Length: 115
Image (cartoon, rainbow, N blue to C red):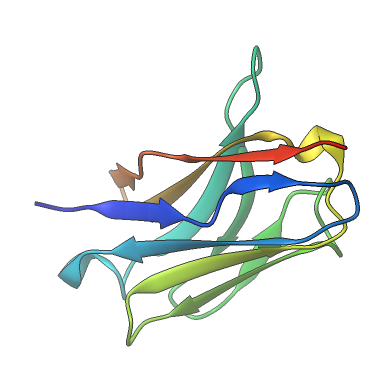
C-alpha cells in the first residue's frame, strides 16, 4: 500500500517559521516528482512547490524567497521549510507524489498563521 504521511503543521505567528515533512513508502519515491500543495477554506487546491527526481525546484510566486523544498531519496522524505509566514499561508498542506499519470496524496496537515 502506497502511503504519504505529512507532519509538522501547527499554529505560528506571522513572520514565524515552520517545517513540514512527508514520509513516503518505498519504491514510489526516487523516480517521482514530489510536491506540496495547499488548500485554504473556500479555495481550490494550489501548487506550492515541487522538486523533481533530478532536484529541479519550482515554486509558486506567492512563496518564492520564503519557502524551500528539499528531498532525501535515501530516507524517502520531502520537506518544506516555510519562513516569513503570512496569514494568507494558512491552509491544509498536502504532500503529492507524481509520475506520469500516477498521483498519490497524503492526508494533509493544517498550517495556521495567526497572532
